[in-house]
Length: 182
Length: 176
Image (tube, rainbow over all chains, first blue to last red; front, side, top):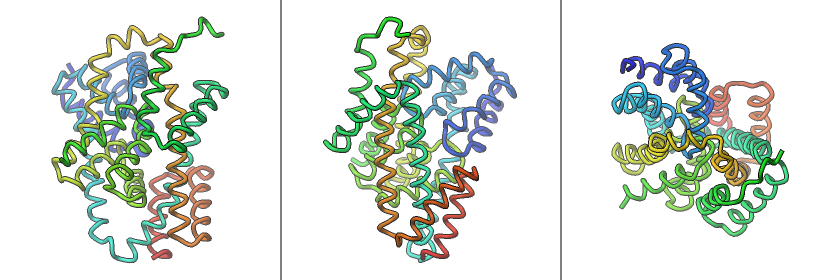
């Protein structure tokens, strides 16, 4: 059993130093739980990460919750989650609430206009990341076919994205698996 | 009932959002901007901007703010719970099964098959942001800011938080 204080520090530090969302925080978590506090060894960490990736939702809270649970029981899980979630939740609520207070000031309105192009670029870069990930995972032929299907369903037919994703998940589970493709 | 709506608005994106928190950004946008109308697209981009400038997981920050904005502290707790709870519960409950089947092609395919759909959603959100940018500010500063932030982020590899703070200052001074 790890001490609750260590669990808290490990996840607090990695979350508070992790900019750019959960996935970019993974190496920081690894450093804390494998090297600094030695809750797990490297192989176990990689295994847990791989399993976490077969499930939906934010990866970092799955890691925190599971590792906290494993080394500190239910209290450890809640502790690790609190350390990951609470600091950034409070910061964003304070920052945006303060911004909304002064919404009508021209300076604040200008700030909003100025930052939108940056977010557009970041979203564009993220899009390209996922296009690359798709072609890497599926091969370009299947990636393009699924891309076109998803585009037709979501953009042209305005179907709810969750329906498309559930359909794709069912395909992944039910379609026959080619015996030793390579 | 606002609490049920808040729960569903975050439960659905996170239970189908494969590929980590960022993959859920366009899915959450579908719920909070289009379905429930809690935020406009430009308000959503503000949340993303400050979310990216502050540390910690992005999906949590969106959830916490929208929940708080709509229904106070209890709202924030519900949206965060809807974001974190279901996938963590699956992880703890199914770890044994997933571990035994971790090399099964079907299990490995799960997250792969979803990637192209996530990419389409992200692409459409990107277009939404570009369109709003070009319609709210003159096309010339819009293009300058788009190109400038691309160079700063991708070519010069500046820290995203730095680029966002600079854009906030430039916008406040020149676009007010």
